[in-house]
Image 1 (cartoon, rainbow, N blue to C red):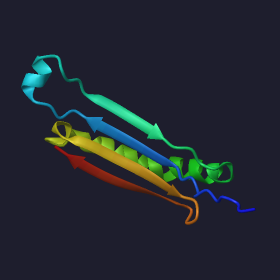
Image 2 (cartoon, rainbow, N blue to C red; image 1 turned 120 degrees about the horizontal axis):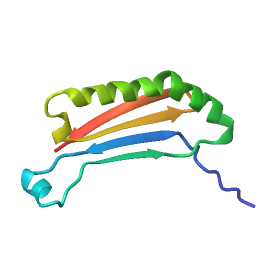
Image 3 (tube, rainbow, N blue to C red; image 1 turned 180 degrees about the vertical axis):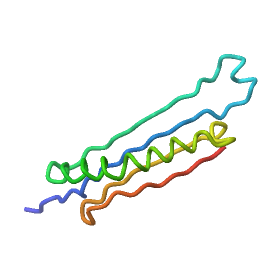
Length: 100
């Protein structure tokens, strides 16, 4: 009998800030700034390490990302940060992006 192997689940924390809109859309009441936070599950065996790395490093990445919101033009663009936990390497990394 063949056994199915599931890929490892990695912690992913994604935060998105979307405020880019024209003045006309805002004035027409058809737009409102939104924030979204998504957290994906982690296998039980890796949760302690994921939690520790999230507290030690991940929150620092998010703090720096949020502090950038004070820069001119930041709120006029779609902003995104994703934290990825890699249990095989015992690491957490951040990737940021933005678009109009």
